[in-house]
Image (tube, rainbow over all chains, first blue to last red; front, top):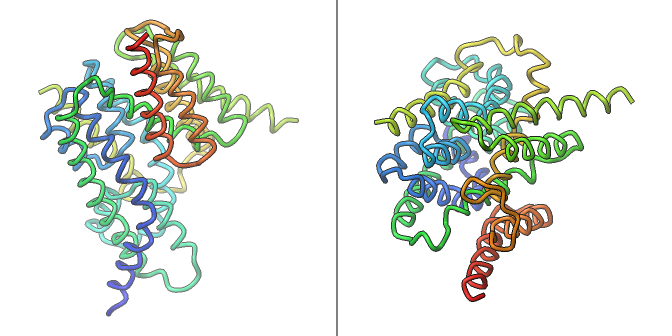
Length: 230
Length: 107
């Protein structure tokens, strides 16, 4: 077995424990697309093209209330800003690859892939074939995710509204929010953003989400700055 | 048509952000202040989605007992914090919601 193939297999194996979380999350993303009024084809297209659970859930939420397209795209972009950080961190490792490779790996990059690849690149030794490791993990995650979404799309179309499966979408955001709050500044940002979102709920075009997010980010930075001075 | 435009736009946005530094820009030109601000994007955006999802019903604030979502949500937050498991939070929250809905229907 050559080195590229060995790295690919190692990457697929490394991502396996993560799949336990991927499957239910993908299922919920599929359900969300259907609850939002998308057709099964639209739900699957969104997933195949964007391959981002959080962006898919946000898009579903905003499409459900018939938001303007610009607001839906803007909100999905805001929740995806973290990709800028990942992209900046990965860029030096991938600089030696040709454009096709870099395009493919950028397209497949998720929170989990990024974390695994970054860890592998930090290990000592020869890292010339680590892009195969990245590709192995990413492909495994991609295929698993799409299968889970399709199951969610099919189930979402069958389950009656009285089961309140749409609430699973809010719960999946809670499951992301809780581990994202690690410091006092994170907590402050979350509380301010939540309060502003309620207070501004009457704003048109779902602008409350944008206003509340900016208020939360500003609060986090302000709390951090005060702590640093003490 | 509108939905397809949103799907294409969201997909383009996520790809361009992922590709930003890998394909287009020099990562050394990533401003420090912006990097610090990005740290607060997840807690802020997620809380801004969760709060109305739990505390509002039909466009108005509703923290009464007729709205079981905020009770199920608070318990889900506790489960997520204690177990660190997304599956536990989602499954537990749905279970609590169903029990409360079932109970309310019989009041």
